[in-house]
Image (tube, rainbow, N blue to C red):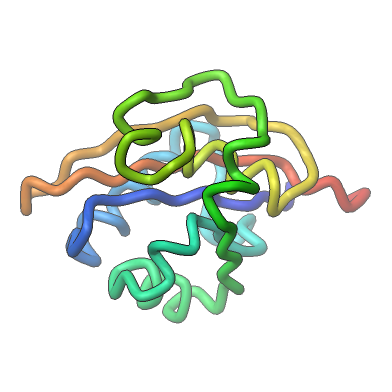
Length: 130
């Protein structure tokens, strides 16, 4: 199965926090990094070091969407806190859905790392016939 990751994280979350969140999210639906075709997030995170590094390490293309586009995507777990700070009620779920054109197979998976920072992962099946 080919999937797209939707990623969100606190500013300056460590690479290890993001890596652990992704690993646990994938494992929870019996997938591995080899099933991932790319990752997506909000454009406000296009300079987030951990996001850039994890995508580079896996060779995943990164897709960034503006808050306005993400806000148009119906999601199962909207958050008023995310809306307040990001201008959209969802980042990970909406980004995964927009980038994949498919459906969520893992809703918002939240993880708090040893650095005290939070990361969120959503996984959507690619709508590419594969």
